[in-house]
Every structure is written in structure tokens, then in C-alpha cells.
Amino acid sequence: MFARGAVVALCFTFALAPAPARADAGPTEVRIDWAQGVVTARGVGIANRHAPSPAAARGPSRRLAEDAARQRLTTGIGTVPLAAGGTLADKLADPTVKARVEGAVAAALVVDATPETDGSWTVTMGVPLEALRQALAGPRTLGAAADDGPPIVILDGVTAAPGLGITVDKLAAPTLWVKDLPAWAKSAPRVKATSATGGAITTPGTKATASTLFVIVR
Image 1: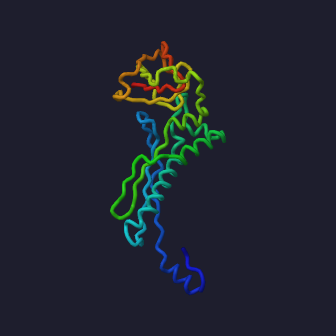
Image 2 (image 1 turned 180 degrees about the vertical axis):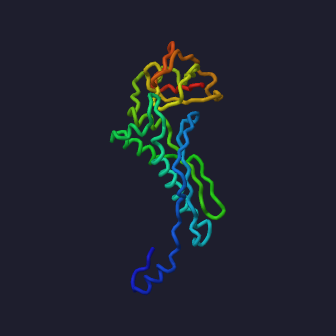
Image 3 (image 1 turned 120 degrees about the vertical axis):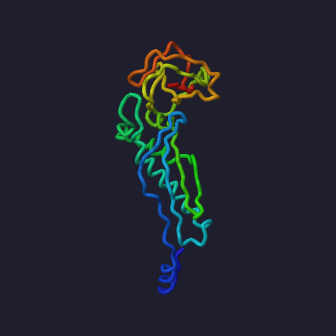
């Protein structure tokens, strides 16, 4: 807090005030992990060199690192490809979609946080791809029978590239795109896709509902 009172005291306070910490100003790239279902960006908060100790610098530098990561997400999240073609940036002209995407970024989760010995932090923040899908399509509507279908369905034979908002048998549902099937999904029913074009996958039938997670093996 700045001193209040005499001008001399105020000037003395400014003279002793430490230089503020600063956030990393590197590239604005984001990384898309289709297998984990998350878009991430990294931020670095540089420690205040005038702080009394590295421990005292860690709080402000951690907040700066998180802010830097969120800013990278804000700048780069429009590069996420859409299953039907184009990118998420093409949809941000819609104020409703834009507001939802901004809300998803504001609620980004800390994926990794590494403290440095000088009090600096490197923090990776992530936005779930499902949050972005719902930003485009709106919240899922789950009826009384929403849980009647299988919780997980494995899809084989999909040759399309990963994209946000793909549908399966006209059903909009969460998806993961994996090369190796995770252990937690191995007992799920498995279906081979018959086609995958224009952001739509068709199958012989999955009995899935809006709460089903599709694990797409490529």
C-alpha cells in the first residue's frame, strides 16, 4: 500500500517500491490434445527480483503465469479445427458463441504448475474441448432416457481428421480421438464406422445417447 500523508513520505514510498513482476511475452500458440480432450497454453510469471524472498515472489508470479496462459488461450483458441471445416475463429462473430468461449477460457483449469527456485512460475492452463463444443452447440439437453445408452462407445474405421463438433449418427456428443485405446475404455462396446465425411460419422448403430462418450480410434 502507498503511504498516505506528507509529500516526502509519499515520495519515499515510491522510491522504495519494488519493480513489478512481469509475465512472459512469448508466442501465443496453443496445443490441442485430442486424446485428452483439452486445449492448453503455457504462461510464465517472472519473479519480482526486488521481493524480500523467492517465497514472497511466488504468489504474484503464479497469478501472472496463469493470466499469461489464459491470454494465450484467448488469442490462439480460434485455431481449433471444426469437424465440418474451418476453425473455431469462424464462429466467433456470433456474440453468443463468443461469450461462451470467453467463459470457457475464463474457467480454464491448471493442468501443470512448476515453481522455479527464484520464485517464478511456469503454468499450463487447459480448456476442455467439450466446453468448446457446447459453446458452439449450446448445453446438452439430457432427457429421462439420457443414461439408457452405453456410457462409452469405441469407434473404429474413422479416417477423418480430428475436429470439434463431429456428430455420430446425427447425435452431437463428446468425443476423444486416440491412437491407443486407454485401459478404462477397453470393455466398452465397439462399432466400426461406415463413413465419416462433412463432420458426420455414420455407423450400423450404437444405441448411444447424448451422455455417451465416443472414443474414436484412428
